[in-house]
Length: 250
Ligand SMILES: [Zn+2]
Image 1 (cartoon, protein in one colour):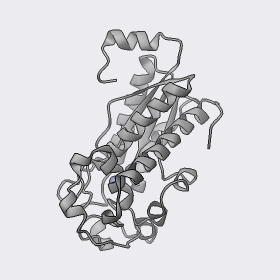
Image 2 (spheres, helix red, strand yellow; image 1 turned 30 degrees about the vertical axis):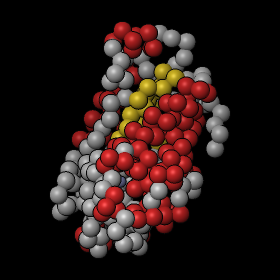
Image 3 (cartoon, helix red, strand yellow; image 1 turned 45 degrees about the horizontal axis):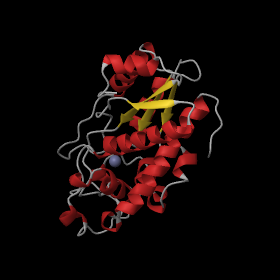
């Protein structure tokens, strides 16, 4: 969308196919010593770009990737340089305004595509759905069980922050932001974020994630990343289609 002019946007919105805006959402958050701070929003953007291709080929909708929201609720990484957190209420209010603006310009549906999986952040994103009529706004996030089930074993274990799962996706989506020399030497860490959070342990430091990652970054591959981006794209397509009452593939 950022590359459209107002003239080409007018043409798109006036076309035969209803327009869906996909909004990549992430965080500015430490992702180990080997991945960029923008990892989560890059993962969301990669899923959105691939989902837009699927919409294009499949019809009847057409999708545009809207400008991203790169700041989120990032309290788990407190204490590490580059953890930039915004209050949950501010994020929800901002996302509400972004959705309202996209709908007002003539977009049929907005999908908030989130890959920063901190529970308080997820809740703040989902709060932007409250009070809206059906079919206008959806959230696509792999914390939803039916999508989590389709992802990798590491993802399902919960030991997955800047590990094999996210590092693989970054190797496919933005290899220039992966420090390969550091990555290949990183030992696996087996701390389950989801278990720790359930037990009330709130920060990476308290969890023992001394290098701001858990999982196995050294086991990551570009091929796994490509396959995972396909799965995240399928999640986006199905969330949008389900919200609009169209048949889904999953
Ligand atoms: Zn992440």
